[in-house]
Image (tube, rainbow, N blue to C red; front, side, top):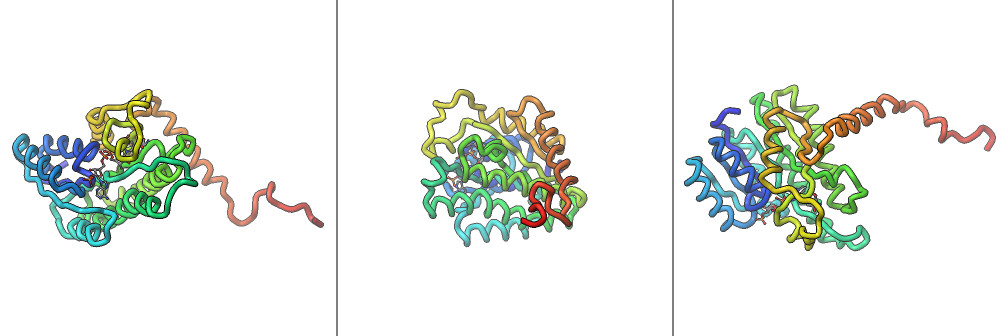
Length: 264
Ligand SMILES: NC(=O)C1=CN([C@@H]2O[C@H](COP(=O)(O)OP(=O)(O)OC[C@H]3O[C@@H](n4cnc5c(N)ncnc54)[C@H](OP(=O)(O)O)[C@@H]3O)[C@@H](O)[C@H]2O)C=CC1
Ligand SMILES: CC(=O)[C@H](N)C(=O)O
């Protein structure tokens, strides 16, 4: 990738986003860092400028707020230097589905799905027009498995995977690379923020290892990167089965098992 490409990273004040910022700064890229906590963003920006000599701009935004989201969209539309969007900002949600209040439901959907989609949609036309660039959407393995018990959060992450695969089908022929990254439990603040104790987990990946693995997938132009999945064939089998299913959907008639016997 051209080192003169600027990378915009959401959720860059901590965890996975901050680590992406470090890694891309080391690769020589200028950065635009987005999150709510300006003090933390400023401190990170200062360190990255000093360590890597790159230009780093801070854009304070609460992506669940209309005006802030619109400002980041505008920036992505207008700034031709930004060639990569790391769509990372997200929050987790604990508790049973019956315990979710309306406000909490709105917030997790607004951040994990609406903001992510709108930012991707803001930058995609410009990248497609230029015939280059990349959009990285951070999902989660939880989005593959309702059994993991995070129904609402998992549903937002299933959305991210579906959206990414659809975007990839549409945009890769136009020169734009779209990657979905699916981490599993990774040591960041997200757990504490959601009121979960990370120390109760049997296994946790360190955030540097996660981002470095995601970047291996990025450099290989993988459409779906699942760093904690040790048998890659499992994903190929799942995705292949899904595609096989499509060929068995024949829309002219209901399947035999749903037909009422004549006369009943
Ligand atoms: N850690 C894990 O185990 C896993 C994480 N993920 C995903 O990785 C992504 C990053 O999370 P992670 O690094 O772990 O968690 P962190 O809590 O460390 O980081 C979340 C980032 O999002 C920002 N953010 C939160 N709310 C908003 C908001 N309303 N507007 C703008 N920015 C916001 C936070 O900054 P600030 O508070 O300053 O706004 C922070 O920079 C998320 O999408 C998460 O779902 C996926 C699977 C596993
Ligand atoms: C961060 C979470 O809460 C979640 N378990 C995940 O792995 O995505």
